[in-house]
Amino acid sequence: GLSDPYARIYMNNDFTGLSTKVAIQTLSPVWHEQFQLEVFRPMSVLTLKFYDADFGTNHGISGHLLQELGMADDFIGYIDLQLSRLPHNTLVTGWFRIMEPSTFVDTVSGRLQQEAQSDFLQQTAGQVKLTLRLSTGGVMDEFFAYCIGPPDFGIQL
Image 1 (cartoon, rainbow, N blue to C red):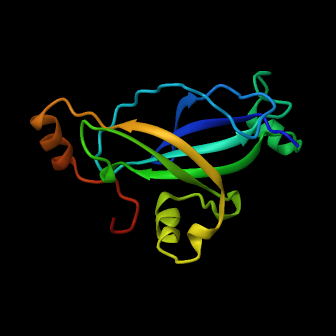
Image 2: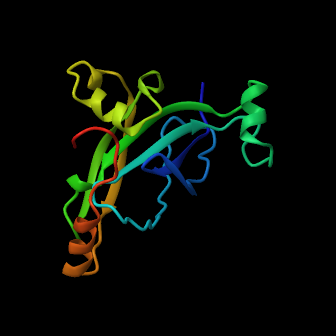
């Protein structure tokens, strides 16, 4: 059947509070939404988690309570984007694989390690077209970010 998809945006596994609108009754959602995030560490990982909206979305009911009752929105896939791979101050548009929910692990490091497996990229739930820009204010911003160092995911990136 049809889905009511939306995406939630995470930075280094922390929910940013940003989500797309729910696309009603479709298998080909189009959002045309823009979000701006502050990035303090150049080795950060941006994660988009895709859900199918069910009973609890927009009803003000606790996500934990809905999960316990089996009524939480269905997790349908995710994308991890390593920001260090994006060129600075350049608009990039491309198709990105949405990975199957069964491959999701709770840690960024665990997901990045999975990416290295040859059969991992075969486990996709679809694709999404994204346009991204990693903007930097100037050389000092980049230097400062470099001096802070990468977040500690427990693996070498």
